[in-house]
Structure formats: structure tokens, C-alpha cells
Length: 266
Image 1 (spheres, helix red, strand yellow):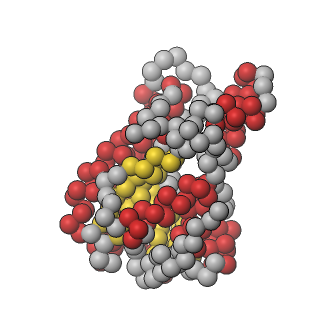
Image 2 (cartoon, rainbow, N blue to C red):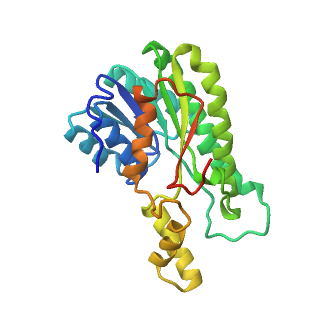
């Protein structure tokens, strides 16, 4: 079953970072289906043009801006280009992320593994948000959405830096909600659980190889841990992002919404 969303974001423009073939693409298309024009950003530009074509096929405008969110100049250029080409900035979705190499063994606690996740997932999201704030104010307010993770509540040793960076981002979003609320700027987090797709399937394949079982057996075991025995698709997560981007959540700020099929409750 699909839920009609046409018109929720008509006349608005959104920035989505970390656009690739997975969640970033799904978020961009969900926003376009709701009527938004979309600026597409990623450090790797391979898929940006393809997603832009999909956005435009839905009747929305798109602009492509290769961006490294750890570079303040890139973030400023992304926001300025969005404003110039799409006319305004109303929504910023911080989806860009990185994580430790979970294939690489390590002997206990290693803070060096945390540096890249902290730089991209936390400071990168904050740098892009800071660049966007003047334009959100100019638009009369808007929405910043941080994509966090189930790992905030259920961290695993191989991805401790990833979990810590997203936990820090969650706290930062709560502070930003208070600081930016007087400007009509809302700041919320969407915390997905496992999302079926490229990187997760690679992880499941690695686990399956270690254990000598089938990949789908691993996926079924993980899904069985959820109240809803299912692993979400990128499109299913994108609906929660659209909720925070739109006026459906106009009285909601400083919140983190778990979208993990009931893996965590409360």
C-alpha cells in the first residue's frame, strides 16, 4: 500500500547529501514526488546525474553538486548553488555517512577507527547545516533532518565509531532544535534499522561466509529480531524523512524517530 504525498512540498526546495543508489536516492525521489525541487549532493558523482534524471521525470527540478561535506567550502557552494538554481532552501537532509571497515580486524579499542565517522557523520552534517541556516531563515523557516541509526541504541564493536558519531549527531540535533526554533527551523532525526541494499547485503554476505550459511538465512535471523519480522527498504525509510520535511510534522522538533520495524521499543 502506498500513501499519497503529492503536494506536501510544492514550491519548496530540498538538499539531500550522500545521494547514491540506496537511501539517498529514495529520499530524493520521495521529496520530488511530494512536489519539491531537489539538490543532489555526494562526494562521488557517479550516480548523481542518473538520480537527477529520475527527479526530473517526476516533474521536479534537480541540480547536481558534487560535495564533500567535511569541506566547509563545498558545503557553502552546495547551499548557494541550490538557492541560485532552485530559488530557495527549505529542507536539508543530512544523509552522507561513512563507517569503519568492519572487515578489518582490530585488537580492542582503537580511536583511530573513529576519526572518519566523526568527521563525516557528525561534523560533516553540522557543517552543511550551518551553511544552510542563513538560507532557511531567508525562506522563513524550514526543516533539517539528520539520518542516524539503530546503532545509537544497539552498538556493535566493529562499528563503535559509527555508532558514537551518530549518537553525537543526535544530541547535536536536540541542541540545534532549541537554538534554531525561534527562526522556525525544525531539527529532527530519522534512525533507521537494517536497510536491505548494497552495503547491508555485503555485510550479510560477509557474516554468511564466516558462518558457512546462506545470506538469506542471515537476513531472516536479523528480521526475526524485529517486532515486525521485516527488513526495511530504502523507499520505506524515505517516508519517515518526508514526514519530517513536510508540514505534517510542523509541531515536531528535537525528536529522533526509530524506523527499525520494532527492533527497539521506547
